[in-house]
Image (cartoon, rainbow, N blue to C red; front, side):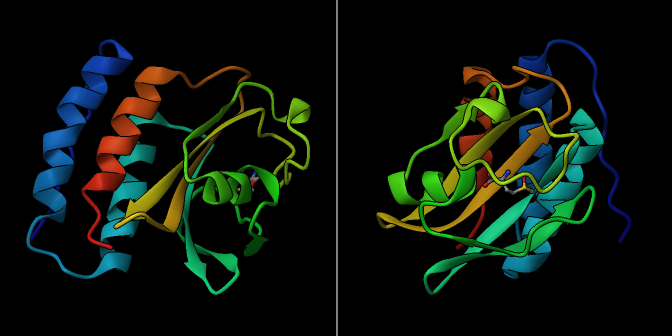
Length: 157
Ligand code: SME
């Protein structure tokens, strides 16, 4: 079955508002977490044209690269390392307006200037993170946090 995403314009909040039910529809009825992470990354990239959007999955004491859209990226990140490892360790969303100011930031791409990392938490345990990078400084705010947290809540793991 063909799946088409309706790309919308308007304020960022409006874009998220229209994307959310479409994502719900896309993920509903599919049990496979890799398929759902892949479609989520693709839908976010298509709508927002961010530099990089993707998932890291907790495996043992590391985050391992999962489905993503954008340039190739680092494959393994230790707990507490970089923005992703810090978001995992702290189990909270981190918004980094200027990655150069973040101690220990892992530069997978020199084009990345700002970043948001949203942990995926199930029963109090972080099972992975959603990482979004922008080539613009100060690109993410509390609206992104609010909606990206809702979006990772749709994932079934
Ligand atoms: N910058 C991240 C690493 C992942 S890439 O940006 C895709 C970090 O500091 O954890």
